[in-house]
Length: 194
Image (cartoon, rainbow, N blue to C red; front, side, top):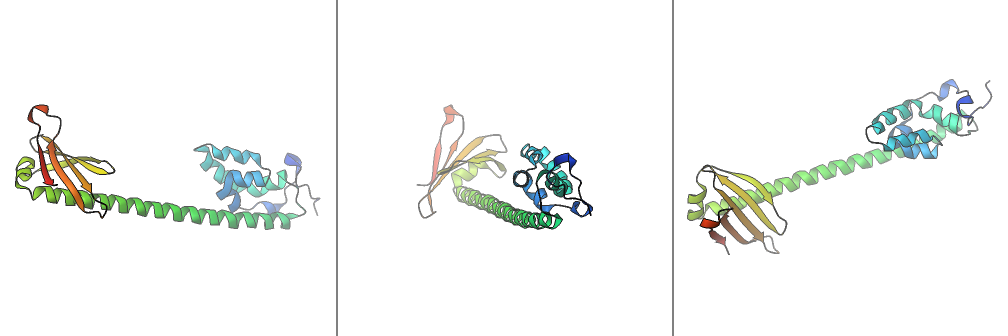
């Protein structure tokens, strides 16, 4: 039987059954490193290098923990690393849930925004004067604004218009106006909803 040389740094003799994949080190990188006195794991804070360090720590985590921290025996190391692995997986699952929820929220926000734009344009095109100005072919070049939505529309003749819409507290259209954009000589404004 080999003497317990854990915690002696590079002088430590690492038992064979220590050399296993370490999920805690893989998922938690620098946090795991601090807890296991493996400060090289702090390199995981550096972008791009963090990916390399995740895999390095996954492969070498148990060995590094054995070398850098005093353990009573291999079983104590494995018990400790099992706890780190469980914690790492919990953190990763929570992280994935947050990403999925965030992606769903962004998708729904984009979908709602597009539905809102479509509704505004539909209302604008119900106005005959506005329909004549925009013509059959037009494209929406941009939308911006928070309290008011500003849609920039370019028709097939290259004329640029802006549609400004505003909702009331109950999300009903309070006002919609169509005006030309950038031509001071021919300024006009059509109030679709006042």
